[in-house]
Image (tube, rainbow, N blue to C red; front, side):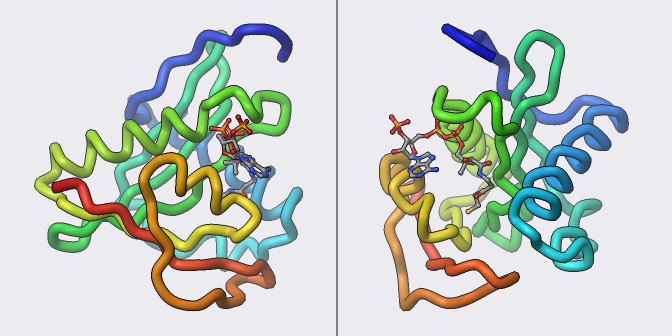
Length: 147
Ligand SMILES: CC(C)(COP(=O)(O)OP(=O)(O)OC[C@H]1O[C@@H](n2cnc3c(N)ncnc32)[C@H](O)[C@@H]1OP(=O)(O)O)[C@@H](O)C(=O)NCCC(=O)NCCS
């Protein structure tokens, strides 16, 4: 993918789109980053709101929100390698704020891989607590208040 790329960010609209999102997660987390499939597939997908980014008819990004009371747990943020550094993850995080508010949520929490901390900070997230290891990757908990 080169040059300016137009993309749309919204909820997954069909089982096929959800399957494409799960395939992208497998490619990025399990194949690229070496996360075991049993950790990537944590059983919470049926409870999730799945957001997708579509460019030229192709699913190029995704993330998942699980509402727990007024808190949205955001995870599984992935953008296909050829579409990175074009603002797609940033757009997914903005859409996640809108979805959280629509679901009655007031806060979004996540475990950020520390290398990507700046992405979340630029979207208004703040770190809380110490760094820790999850799935063999260094993380830090971050949160964003929406009220
Ligand atoms: C992390 C990831 C989702 C970012 O997606 P993206 O669409 O490329 O992100 P954006 O284009 O919105 O990036 C916005 C800003 O975040 C920061 N950022 C993004 N990727 C970064 C990286 N690899 N290293 C350092 N900073 C990064 C930069 O400040 C970037 O702004 P810039 O491009 O002007 O420098 C993507 O690289 C990915 O899927 N990585 C593998 C899976 C992963 O690590 N997921 C996150 C789990 S916490």
